[in-house]
Length: 94
Image 1 (tube, rainbow, N blue to C red):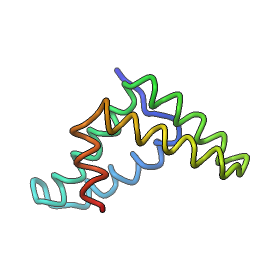
Image 2 (image 1 turned 120 degrees about the horizontal axis):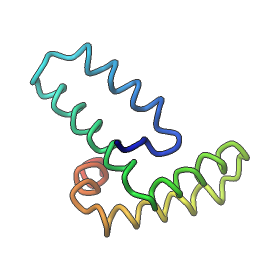
Image 3 (image 1 turned 135 degrees about the vertical axis):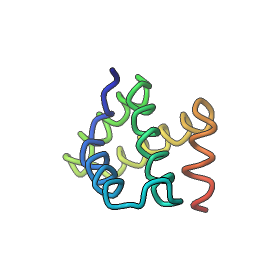
């Protein structure tokens, strides 16, 4: 069984709560389900887990430069190694 990446437990709890309140198999329910699957997949990637741990520590230390640096590294990794998820999660926002 995989674990969640550091700092993602609250995200997962929020998604599970929203999933319980959504109508099963609706567009919203399917979207939430995909996000849950993405978080599970993220927990399987060692690079993302280590970077998320660094990101959480930088956020606790209020180190904005480090937060930006780590965020860019995660973004680049997602863009090249997890292309389908990056396309679904990042490109559609812009």
